[in-house]
Amino acid sequence: MGKNRLTADHRMKEIRELLEDKKSVVIPALAERFEVSEMTVRRDLEKLERNNEARRVHGGAMIAERRAFEFNFKGKRQNEKRAKEAIAKEALRLIEPGQRIILDNGTTTLQLAAGLKNFSDLIVITTSLAVASELQFTEGVEVILTGGIIRRGSPDLTGVVAEHSLDLFSADIVFQGADAIDKEGAIYNVDMRLAQVDRKMRQCARSCCILADSSKIGKTALARNGFLKDVDTFITDERIDPMDYRRFRKMGVNILKAPLKPNNKRSLNGQQTSNNK
Image (tube, rainbow, N blue to C red; front, top):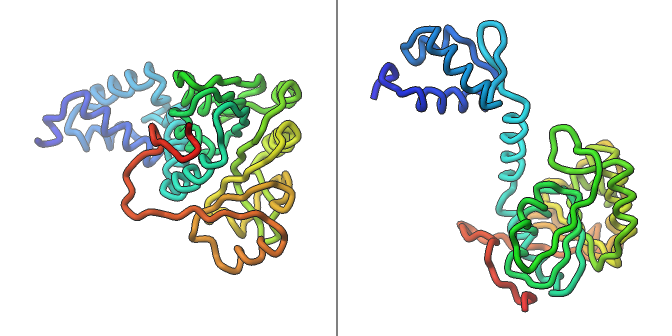
């Protein structure tokens, strides 16, 4: 099918893909690409704007902030997907029915949340809108979403309301991600508000488990929230550098290496684990 025979739906699908890739488009180039009039392109962009998928500017359009966020968050979830699935599977072994657990806003903890759907009698406390959405229809899991300020560009809650909400609870275990972990075992967040909430979460739980793939190790970010030696368990993937592994062990870190299975296309959703009774 030639470009000039594309339907409006097909044109808009390609425009969405261009916006996700380039973040902006110009009307003359689109008209030439699809072999339609500039007026037709303007109508396509108007429809995308009405759907909050694009924001029209002089001579073209930019990707809408909401659409950009959805695309970026989806991309973040896909980064190191195999490692996140393996780490989450290992973390499931630490959970037993009847427990109260806290999940932070990380994409690896979100992957863990997807694996909780066959558990029963769990209470999950979270500051993550994504985690709450993932679990909201799960029969055996009661979800408590804290209050707080929605962090711009991310589906999580921060601020004093979130911190004070956490003061209400006592949990068995908290699972937290990390934006970076340096060679000395310091744990980092990209946002100071997230670091403060993570510290508060650890005060509310009897034990803490950090979930972070090996690509995070040897890096730093804006705000330090603690050290691996002060948490109960650190789960990463088996690709961790042997020198880093030995260094962390010498520091007294209880570190677990999650095995990566090649070409493993099975999702954590619905999987039964040995601890899932």
